[in-house]
Image (tube, rainbow over all chains, first blue to last red; front, side, top):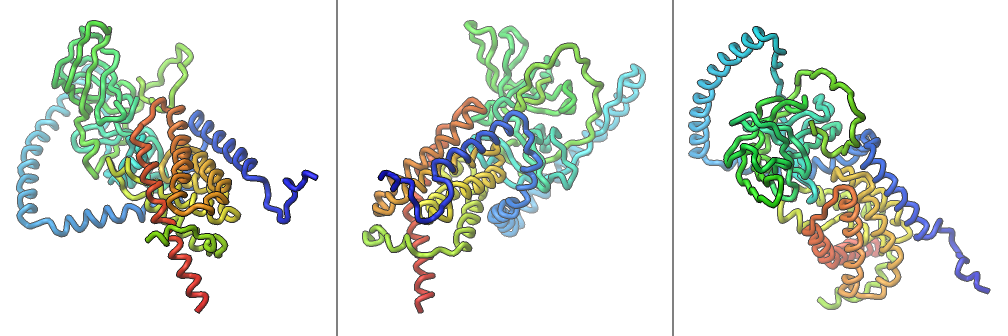
Length: 300
Length: 173
């Protein structure tokens, strides 16, 4: 009698192997759906309601540490900070009045030439709740979510330049993919000569790179890259990166250009979410769109 | 000290309250969610994986593959990883724990560590494999977490044993 194997005193449901196969297949199915079609965002935000209390609690030690630091900062450093901020403010005020004059002039010129006006941007401050939780990714989570009308695709910057783009919105949080995330693309222009190109994140380091730049292209060390605004996602003229290294190897058709982000991508706590970008006219559908990788959205 | 590392067979039969299990999993999710950065993020043990493995090996009839999968889904939401990435890894982890739980009971804690290292390596490898399939690259320092997670096994087991012992003592008074 070899039925001792299958005989059981207690009913314990399916065997571990059956469960393993069932849940593994279920996971793979979910992975496939999430990676390819992104149908599960609503489920994710519903489940995040369960998880977010734990997440909020987990940020408390960091917040407490920072508050203690704030509390213990000496009067001398506060006075110094205050003085330098005052100086900065005066310098900025001078530049701002100039900027207003230029804006007026620009508006008149655009009127004369019948060009569309550049809309004013509205900004919404946000604070980083935590940074890159997953070692694979360069993402941060900020404390404004669907409750503050944050939308997927909005641009996030700090006081100097572009930091990243909102890629996922939860009820109270949203996820910002940093410009240094691998294959994250930003359409840019070289400020010096207006050369149009696209800057990509390098992924494992906090660097960016320009791909497909012909060896002969006019680009120099220290060139500033600003957003070109061609895609309609990034507003034009915001600093993104500075070129730090150019390798021109005649064996390859393209130069290797390494850039560093201008904004404190890994440093600051306070960020600004931009909204109110002007709508561009619809792109004419002349050819079937190429297979779109969901990771590299703003590919012009 | 050595006596602590001895096999703890009577421990296996001891009851565990659901509160302790739920609390330990929530605490593990909390510890995973602390703002780890840079080198510390690489060295961070996967607390959830180690806790789930502990319960799968000690209470395989209560905490099994299905619950591990559900915890994995929560971990996916918390980590903003792909849906099913942690879930798949923890399913395999739980399978390893449930299948090997009889064998682990035969060993003392030091010998258990090598078995646990194998299971955790498999879990980490599955997670990295999925990432490699989707994104096309692997971050090798990620596997450091596998070592630190294994190192966590002994203190965690001792801690749970102490907590459960405390409950038994209280009930016998």
